[in-house]
Length: 219
Image (cartoon, rainbow, N blue to C red; front, side, top):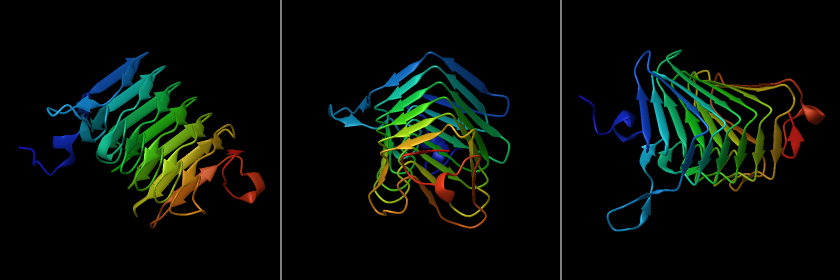
């Protein structure tokens, strides 16, 4: 059985994709708003992945919107988790707006998840701790291309992105057309754009303005 303390038992506010060969393809879909508790108060739909969680499966999202989604722990909109090579999340031409979580205000990927994001927007997303828009952890790789990160906030570090936890996490900013503007890390003035901590982690990019990453720049 599944332990109540395992992420799978609390994952996916609207949709949970699980199992090798399981695949969900979404086109022109909108996820919006929070769940309502029996007391009539707004509450998050899940601990992991306010809208969607993927465990050892594949998710493809195109031309869609995630708005005001939230998770109580990780991945305000989407959470990816599995083993190396077992979980794939592909996002294209999609908007994440005002989504929130403790870590990874919009997307959180862990344990060998492959994440591809292109021609998308993260705007006004927030994390109480790290990664206002995105967190990439343990053996996971995120490739980001032609995407806007605007006005996202983290209570601690990584106003836009966080690459955390030892174990091979990697983010590739591809094509020189990713835009970072107005992101804020309230716990550190040095990580408004990207926060990196741990061993064997990597950030790479095709274009590096002034020799270092910073806010209000293209990568």
